[in-house]
Length: 298
Image 1 (cartoon, rainbow, N blue to C red):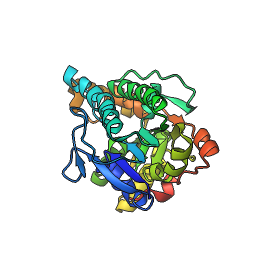
Image 2 (tube, rainbow, N blue to C red):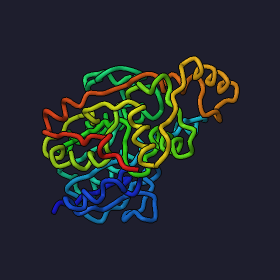
Image 3 (cartoon, rainbow, N blue to C red):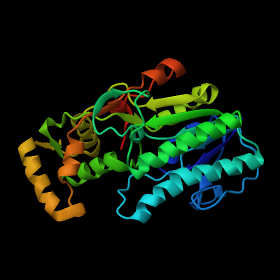
């Protein structure tokens, strides 16, 4: 059984895919928590590895935070880029793996809206999160090329799974507390992926490498997702409000500042569909994603 080093393996993604990975690899987690087997802060130091690993899954990263200060912005580069450099420095000391899989993001494209965006789209992300991931992708491409390592880069969309963070976690909490509302019929579509699909795609990706968007083939609407969540929680179906009412609430939120649950910026993001194409991964890796509406359980 191949040895796998899994950075960020005790976070949201790790908790959702470890049961699958443990059947395929001898897993060692690496990170800052007390649960990690190799305890290190990649943003600040080169970890001390005690053995060679056949495969590395690099999922450690900073996300889901809106930076407010220069220090906040720099933190993205410290974790996502410098942390990647430190990891590679450590791997050189024990011998490079045969394959490395990097968890990037669709944010690298810098798109606020669009339909079935492919890997050919230019990397125009301007946020610290996007820029730091772009730098990490570029570094790994050069490093893996120099050391003859098969590199797989996954650009996942919104991730679904137990204790999901980000927008999906906000939706779950909103439905649970009874204040989540769909806007204009909840027809907005955002690409989504079951977290466990990251583990399911690993064997083919480790062999072939490449850069791939990963998301569900069936693109559910916010209305469909929130309805499924409400049914699982035994809550009433979220109400829908017309766009004019949402705009009034957003304008009020603009006056309240960042504490507001909705403002004009958030409203614009919530009401613009953004989907990505998974055709390349399905065709080249023979991978078929799980249906989110069927498989996402609270």
